[in-house]
Amino acid sequence: MTQVQGFPYSIEGLDPAAGLRRMEGDADLYTALLRDFVATERDAARTIADALAQGDRAGATRRAHTVKGLAGTFGAVRLQPTAQALEAALRDEAAAGTVAELLSAFEAALVSLVDALEAALPPEEAPPEEPMAVDRALLKQVCAELADLMGNWDVAARRLLDGHTPLLRAAFPDDFAQIHSALRDFDFEGACTCLKSACARSDIPLTGH
Image 1: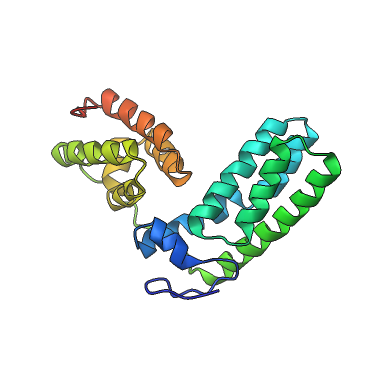
Image 2: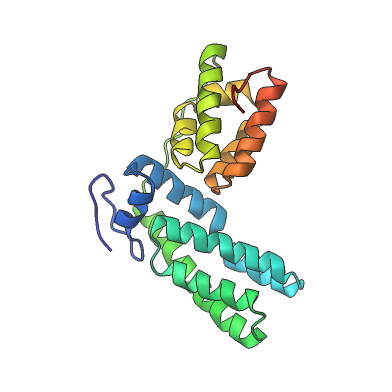
């Protein structure tokens, strides 16, 4: 539990220095992604248990893999190894008793981290909802840069998207949420596919793409 420059929060089970290195030192992006993690993965253990109860071992394995990847990216030093062990057991068809023990340890680590994040991080300020005119020249530039960053699996894509949220939301009201959600989950390929479809429908050319 340490503090680093630009991220003044001490959170049990989190190594922010490691996470910030992966975010290229962007503390605002790191904080935003931690909030997203709480929103999307807080019930991951229950989802995995439900999948196993329904005989969907592949689905349970995928969810454990997702949490393992996110935990590694954020520097969640206690959650990551429990998620890795659970994923390995599911993938290797381990006995039900072994999986149950590992799932219990995973759930405890996940709950502990989520509780610590909720206690430490300040509430997110909602941006004012104001309609805006779409600057098509700027939109073309932003979309081209986004497509390049997504194509290179660059976390700076999330920073660029956050910086131009009003423009992109106004230009692509039916697609923005899906693009944002995919980037939040580090699904760069899915985000890029959705962006290209939105650009095609709006006649926004992506030179070289």
